[in-house]
Image 1 (tube, helix red, strand yellow):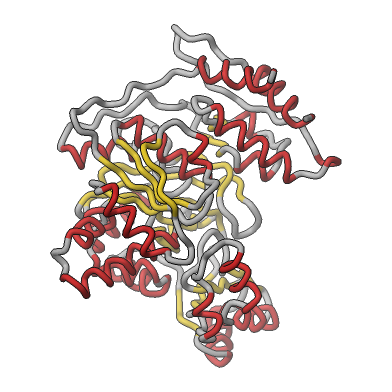
Image 2: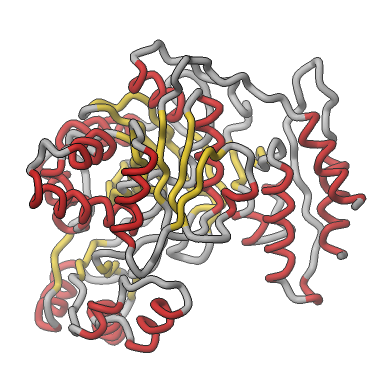
Length: 451
């Protein structure tokens, strides 16, 4: 009870930006197929911007721990496209935003089905194109190799890339490009389906693994436990994945989150990745930057694909030159998209303005610190990370039940011998609110860890 009351007091101390008021708020439908915490953060940011938010998602989603959702509809992994279609019919949104790659793929499939039935002018098709961009670009965003070919045509810097169909192609590539090299399978995300290899043996082994259909046991587990049939057909039909080889760029990763409207970038966030989970995992600490090549690439991609809605672009920044190499597009909202970092850097506010035709009204900048530790990602990576105190730690104190759920879930994942206290930096509250000290937050989470 003491811990619950402490989190509630912190929540009350945090400033709450006023949402824009309209007689009818823009209606947003979030589509999620997994239980990713950043989806809850995006919902909170959209509501702060002035939207009303419904969601179609699996049961047990962290969104249920927030107070911002109007309606939660069930995502059925056994009938995924139909469940998203039903959510659209029920909520009749102004915009639908996919929150993971599988959700984006379901929306592409729904477009194809509806287009076959009623043509591109049908209501659902119109909504999906308004939300994601021109359907002519759907194939490009699903295929890493096709997307990079498109980017190269636009004059965007990319690593040398080639589709690898067999061992002969692989050996020819190695002879031309050498090591290290990167192998990537289409249809994967979050660092899965990516292998950095340094020898012929590693490369051949990685190619076999990446091309192989999903194991039947994995497909059945996903179907029976997660109620997700996505892997069943590729497994039983023995469908092989398309694999591309990519020249290795010595440097560090960077990422852009962009809000687009009819082919124009209306807000953007650019970050270099400081920490991440594993060698190919998602970012946990990022630093905001301004980078002309990243900005230019975003503008060119949005224009070429006529993008709308929220998208992410991944880059490698070359260590010696700082040049940006575009390596991937994420046709969905990303884990940094909720961050309000001032005019031109507030994606939800820009989307609200685009839908309503109003002037962009950004909320208060969440921090002046350009380094941001993402919650709970960085804590999960390293509970003793120095970035939890030196960076702005992006804890959603305004939703205490969500904070408690994250703390509880992560605590359960750790063994009794590896528990360590968590230090959380909280930005000073506004002058008419009581400030929350770093020590309070540290003690609070330390107490939680001892339960």
